[in-house]
Amino acid sequence: MTTLTIDLPDELAKAAQDAGLLDRDSIAAMLRENLRRQGVDELFQAMDRMGTVDTPPVMSPEEITEELRRMRAESRSQNAR
Image (cartoon, rainbow, N blue to C red):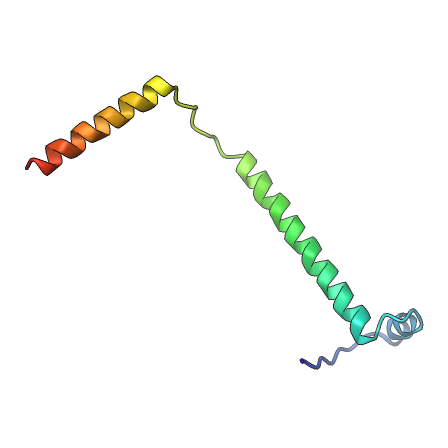
C-alpha cells in the first residue's frame, strides 16, 4: 500500500471532503477511471495514426502465387551456391 500526500487549495479540499471524494475508495475509483479513459484516448489516437498510413494494394491470388514462386526460385538458387 502506498501513502500519498497532496497539496490542494483549501476551498477545493473542503468541497471534495464534503462530497465524500477524499476517502481511499473514492480516490482509487477516480484514478482507475482516469487510467481507463487515458487508455481509450491512446487507443483512438493510435487508430487515427493508423488511418493516415497508406496501405499497399491488396494482392490478387495470382499475384501471391507468382510472388511465392519467385521467392522459392530465389531461395533454391541461393541454396545451390
